[in-house]
Image 1 (tube, rainbow, N blue to C red):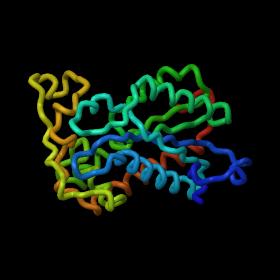
Image 2 (image 1 turned 45 degrees about the horizontal axis):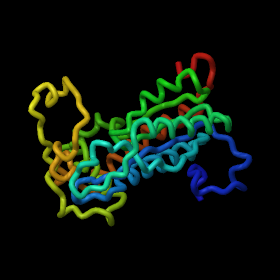
Image 3 (image 1 turned 180 degrees about the vertical axis):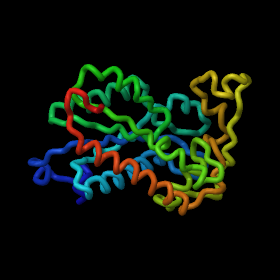
Image 4 (image 1 turned 90 degrees about the vertical axis):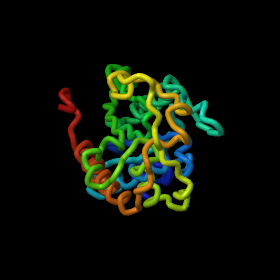
Length: 256
């Protein structure tokens, strides 16, 4: 049993334990091009969370990894031909997380990291809503933003969804579930509006129109070695943050 993974513990082990930080991973269940499994977001965020919490725990931090929420906001995937997206609405996700935050507060937890692995999960509104209604300090980490500065040194052509980045992580950590030779090239379709294509205006993209087979970004250059290099960066950065967070005193000026 790994002492930092809640799902692997029993009450005998936990009943006298106290934690400084809990980490709640968020995933999604959705198609990832033609070559990756529907659980990609869950597998990735769990691997990152487990490894980062292990690093922090072994450095003496009181951290605990909660079970991953496997359903995300996929409402723009629902018209993908032949696709099965297990979607919840933003309101449902926010309500669920608010309940979990409340349960953590009742058990004395004061620091909680929301570790997000799916772009459709917009969690900032929740944090703003709860800011003055909970004693739990919330920290949001979208893992795919955490090492973006290192992408040029690792990847040839990073994209957005089932791309070189995600495929590299898959090849490194769940290769038995990938079929690389089936991959679509992942070319995204532009809209008819230049302002949207340039990012000046945003929309909720209908995935059945924006993609051919749900991929955004060419996965052809992916490799397991690239996935491991990225994981090293993610685990070091998140793990060290968890150590710092666990050791920080919660006073009236926290986190400043």
